Length: 75
Image (tube, rainbow, N blue to C red; front, side, top):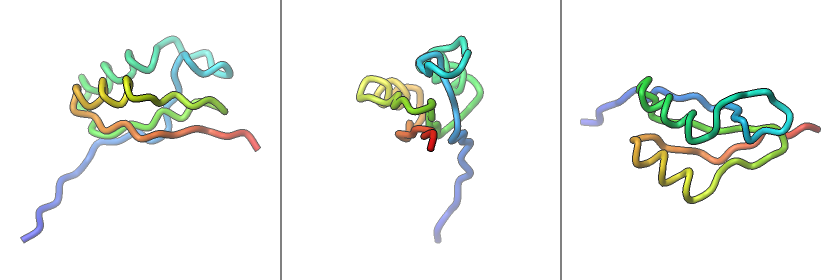
């Protein structure tokens, strides 16, 4: 029998690494906060800027969060 588990996710997030936003928290601070709030999945989607690397992926995983690569492109 297959069981289902709901995941708490946010797939559109910006951080201070985004040159087009005035967000005051870093990717690592966002991951810490999301972990405290029980999130399972995040995607950081800064504007035209890729905020994803092995360090952030592993850091998120250490907090129990799957970090999905993302970007918000201006077209």
